[in-house]
Image 1 (cartoon, helix red, strand yellow):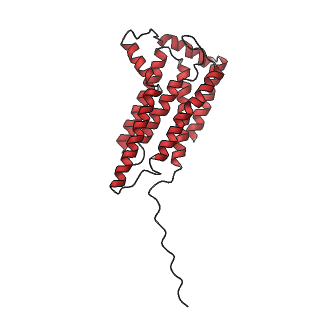
Image 2 (cartoon, rainbow, N blue to C red):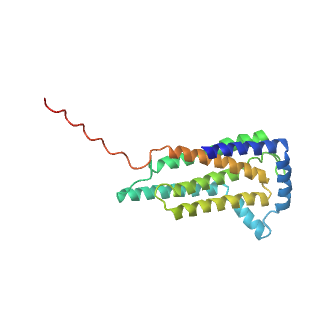
Image 3 (tube, one colour):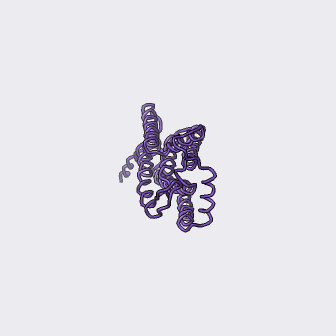
Length: 226
């Protein structure tokens, strides 16, 4: 839970800077103007890749990835059960439920925060902080990596899926800024928010009893005859 607490504290600092027009917000907007290439439709390869990255934060893209990771965990557990091996702690449904809950919490937090902060966007409009696409990408791809690394996955598998999640989230956040859909601090705030949600989900999953079910207790020996 330390990660969750640190993420919440940093998110509060970023939100304070955004709402009060602090020094971070000034640097944020200057950086955005330097990176932004909002021409639509995408006119070149940079814009095309940026748009592709931004679309990774869409629920229509991210949710199937999480569902696929859940299916892989179920399939792996079913295979271990058929072979008589040890199942992942708590069964496949427990981590899936925990991380699905984290994804469901994204709009419950992001939508009220957008209305409360009311930050104007780089290209106009209001309600851009925090970034819903970034929060969705962080939680969905982070959760998918956690599910694929859950239980008996080897070290190389854990490293590969976590690296892939980081790459996808980075592409999403960069694309949102380059295309002019969000300011950089919108993305940073959602990175922190999503990290906090993932940390809470991981803590809930970790509280499930680990290992195989305990063996049945042996019957107590009968008292000696007197």
